[in-house]
Length: 355
Image 1 (tube, rainbow, N blue to C red):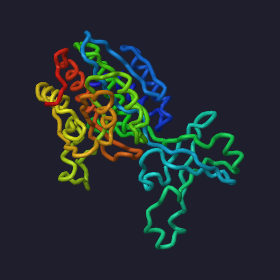
Image 2 (cartoon, rainbow, N blue to C red):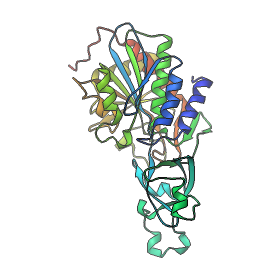
Image 3 (cartoon, one colour):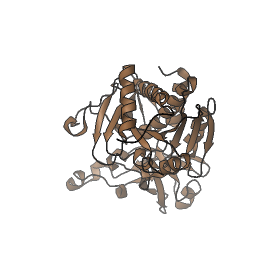
Image 4 (cartoon, rainbow, N blue to C red):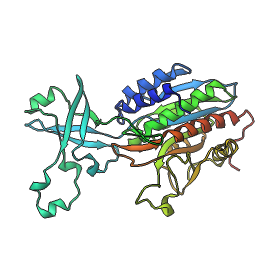
């Protein structure tokens, strides 16, 4: 079970804003925690690394991206209204009327996303979905000059929401995609460090996944480490709420354990290690079948250097890319145990060649 101190760290990590390319603040939180039990470093693209040396065995990379979706300032008009474009994939309907927390030049700047009131819309307007270009942020400024005293073009922001606890060990927060992955890989490393095996294990909080069309920070991380095996940790769609089609996505329940991806870029050797360990430890899990790319760090990692035997483990997540994503603490706990023990199963004789 997650310790009280681990939960305090999780809350601090999720609450700290850090959209893609602006991940420095949550990365500092992650590295400070990692430094209590591992060797820590960072690189030029913002990736953070925590290493536990084994006994000269293969190197295993555990990757969870620390960035979140957000917005970036593109223009301020003469009345001080702020216009923006998305960082990562937003449903614009989610943004309407939300409070925004900008990372301003002198500190946080707060505002609210505005839209024409429904009372003033014509009938045909009411039927149309909002577009990003229909929205703006009101920070209370009365002029462009006043707004620019606090914000600059290119400043980033996130929705202003924080973690809350719900019954049955569920939590709700923005940034769960995928700061929860960055948390899980570090928690797994903490547990591995308490009883290390032969493998050298490196947890990485990677950057720019939400905008990483060329592989983001994960490509750089895997390239620099010369890893033999990798486990990418991300979130996936929970299918236990209304409107989800299990015939398309499979059955993945919050509290039902981690989700292991099979197919696509996943190494059958790495998948088998995770599956066999889960069954031996009696950790519940489900399997997600992927016929194409996974749209996670795994896609970038598996083809670096001479190839990396890569697995993908995901946490079931409700309401992805919203201010209120939901996961189960029990799933995080099970995932960390499974990853740590899987790393212990890797020896100098482990053959990662697909046969």
